[in-house]
Image 1 (cartoon, helix red, strand yellow):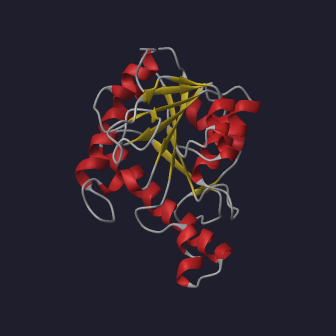
Image 2 (image 1 turned 30 degrees about the vertical axis):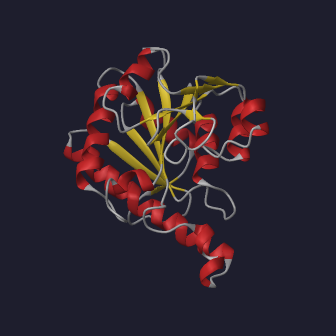
Length: 235
């Protein structure tokens, strides 16, 4: 395998499948099968998941809720998703640990870097919930930060499209895929696939990002094997 330890970033919206909100059991089981496939190939897997299928902090101000309060609500939404994916992975026979940026001992461990690394070394899949535990930071930034902390080889950003495009391919039929980007190009071009903080953290710590289509079975395995032209490499 090209990558020994990965950080897989999934959006909350990805769990919706074809639904308008919530968690699609078919989709989450498909993801679990792909994760199990790479884990059984010897790859150490950590996961960060968003909460957009339940609540997004940026919605807060529009609904009259304080932004900080809204961000904490969004963090709790990520814990719900993290618990769902933990349960699904365990149903597939995998050992997991859920760690949270906010203390809630009844459902998950607090995030401690050395403990997270030890879980990975023991073959457990580690799921990080509640972001970094502070408002104004996205789950993309959380993914970059946690990847650096656990010394992951790469951040894999699973989306509904097979990479970064010149425009939104779901809205613009003339959009073309970009196979490779530098961090400077990604930041300067304003590509919305991840936020600037996430790009900058990975750039400063030499952690590449691969944006790929998680909904196509086999893509995740191909990437960790080192197959080229799957998704967009940002490095």
